Amino acid sequence: MRIRATGAALVGALALTGLAVPAAQAAPVPKDVVIGDTTITKVVVDGDNKVSVGTSAAKTFKVSVTAKDDSGIAGADTFSLAGPDYGYFTSGKPVCAKVSATTSTCTASVTVDPKVDYLSNANAGTWYVDAMVEAKDGDFVWEEKAGSFKFQRASKLTANASPEPVKKGRTITVTGQLTRANWETLKYAGYSGQSVKLQFCKKGSTTYTTLKTIKTDMKGNLSTTVTAGADGYFRYAFAGTATTPAVNSTADFIDVK
Image 1 (cartoon, rainbow, N blue to C red):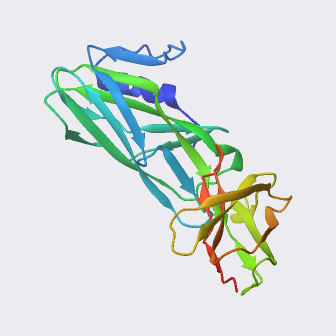
Image 2 (spheres, rainbow, N blue to C red; image 1 turned 135 degrees about the vertical axis):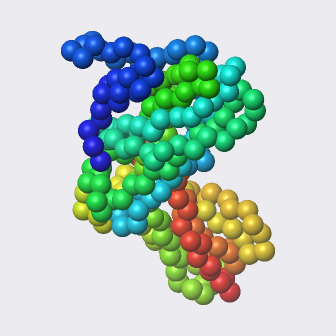
């Protein structure tokens, strides 16, 4: 991961297009630069604009930028991704696929490896995509923050219901733990103070009903009780935050006698 250098990248891009750039110029780089009628119409990151990274495996995801120009799209420059705490990544060379005579979608891959990229936990949050797309007639657009996505610390959630089997009317205790990736230690750690739903699905059904909402303790632990009523599955469900993705635990079946 490198410190963001968007201004320098833009100067280089302008030079490639043949526009004069004074060598000693130090003026602030404008947010957007448009020559002609080229426009960026859509940016999608990893399909749903959310990227979750754990502590060991490298994560490769795609960045797709759709643009249009009356003459058609010729190509795109490498995309820049910038986020909190000086977070910065660049993509591979985009490949553009024609959607229509005027529109193309340019897609490139980005690989993030928590073991070698020195991520900080503060890097999690909202990230932005800077993109430059060139048209066949020489027009182009360079847009800072052309799109945004959530860059998140991967999460895990467990659930265990006991005793099993249990007599109807007796107490069932459901424990679990919510953890998320700590990019600085490369381990998972408890996520404290988070609201988590306890849900139940009766045997033979596919619908989960929320029984109650509780909060994780300082170590991310969960524990609550319910009364045994029927055979079925218990699970915990976490809705997620800006820095941590939503996750459901594996369901635990309880046999009620």
